[in-house]
Image (cartoon, rainbow, N blue to C red):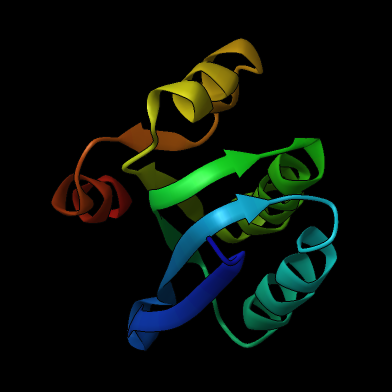
Amino acid sequence: MEETYRVQPLNQAHGTYELALTGRVYADLAPGLQEELLELVDRGLRNLVVDARELEQIDSSGLNVFVHLLKRLRPLGGKIVFFGLNENIRRVFRITKLETVMGVVEERNEALEGLA
């Protein structure tokens, strides 16, 4: 599966965007993804819903993208909520304690409610 991502606004008035991840997020993809997300923060992104239903794997550089993004969003009152994590990635979130600082839910509607 090709490694890719897509970012789209859900509610620009509230700074809410959705990021859909497909395939793998590794060191080769992470810098471009981080740059794009941080540019969106500069343009108003405050809340991010991450659709991980098609995400197969993520390495430490991929996780770091979201840690860095959260550090930028928190002072602005922002949040990140993931949904649709497979069991392996959910385990990584548990081990690294990321599920305690970022929202992790099963379904998209739960993710949107988690931002409210």
